[in-house]
Image 1 (cartoon, one colour):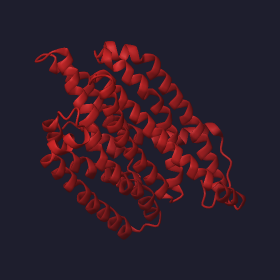
Image 2 (image 1 turned 90 degrees about the vertical axis):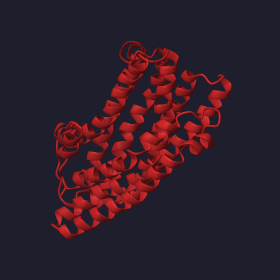
Image 3 (image 1 turned 45 degrees about the vertical axis):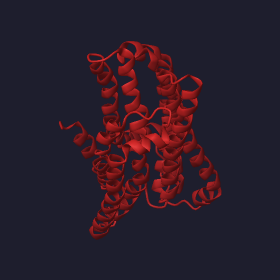
Image 4 (image 1 turned 180 degrees about the vertical axis):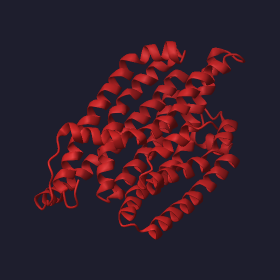
Length: 330
């Protein structure tokens, strides 16, 4: 695509939106109808079937939200992406706490229903993030239409060619996200099975519920704050690289890493030292898991720095490095 080709940019956006909408629908349907098999045969946690069903719509909303965020990032409208992701994480944390507490009271502290409530919170949060992006896009429609009318250097490309280019760029980035989430999937396969060797099935599922439902939710909150910096790095460094401005690249990367440290260190120390009081405050009816939170909090600073460095590498065009680093043995 050439400079000034706003029409071509918007056409790519529409094609990408349609492509990933189809991918999202297929993924959601596969998880919805395959929840029974996954829960009973893969995870060996029959109680997880309800959780997987509640999570299935989130795949669709995540897919289309990612396209809209990419479009706004390319337009240098980073605030839209940052606000939607921050809003999503805030909704996820708040709704998880609220729904888990409500379900705990109604179901007499049923771990199965509590896990379902926490997962439903995730689905609702992804919908909230997409809702914000859609409303923001509507407010920009006139501006976008004006830009399209002023388009210069428009070059028509076949839809198949555009889809191929989109996939070539998105697959390495998607692999990074897949490898990150793969660790949690491995936990879901191994943690419960390992715990069952030392305790009852019910206790093993409850302990995994603490890890996935409460601890992971709390430790992911600092990442939602830092995501604004890692997201902003991608278009900023791409623009600086196009101008061959190495000084700007160094300055923006250094500033983002420093900011990430200022976010990550206090959160790591705070959750490690005050794990018990935090869980008592947020989950008064089910406050177990202080030790797990303390251990998991130690990963916050490293995950935040990893998030920022990945954004810098992707902006510089090194799309494969983040995915390769996640595949390296620890």
